[in-house]
Length: 89
Image 1: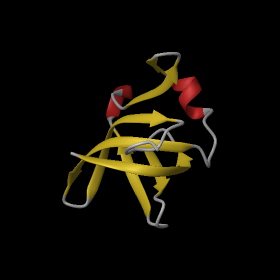
Image 2: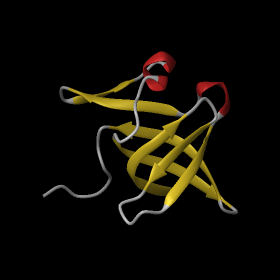
Image 3: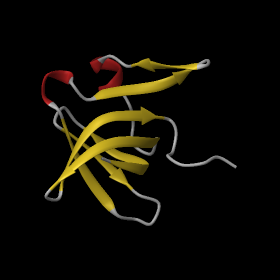
């Protein structure tokens, strides 16, 4: 498992493209049947977004993705929208 932090470049029905802070572009595949979960902070907890909400997320939004990596292929498990990974100052 790996954590990927950056800005959303593109979000489609099959993949998520993230630009990392150093400029690297990573393409994460979405799991079938809506199994990749997208979450947004709501008050003191995380709320799961519906597919319509997910497809409405624009580029440039910060994301933190939990993914599996297998032979150079990244599979997105959970994508936290509106936040970056790592410690906060």
